[in-house]
Image 1 (cartoon, helix red, strand yellow):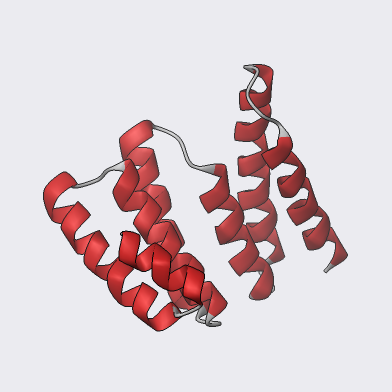
Image 2 (tube, one colour; image 1 turned 60 degrees about the horizontal axis):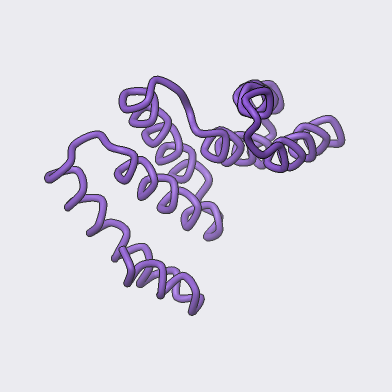
Length: 133
């Protein structure tokens, strides 16, 4: 995983993808569905998104969301927002809005529990982008 992060920081997405794919295989075989496995899937989705591979990116985000739900019983707002961003690029505005609204609901709940609300602002910008488009 460290090699993948290092490659990302250097801007070498191809090498990062290879290392994240290896990390996913290891995490999946050792841990099964886990937070770590979902995180690697999200990062692979991010790399595909950066390369313009929207269908592959969305597929990875959906797999990450399924893993997150299986592990913790709820989705990660960051993964929901990432899936929403893909849908926006694909001009699937309804799905984009649904992903962002789900993220916002989770973030509102966290804010009420005294956790940081700054991520909520980012989600509101995503929602604004959907309305803008």
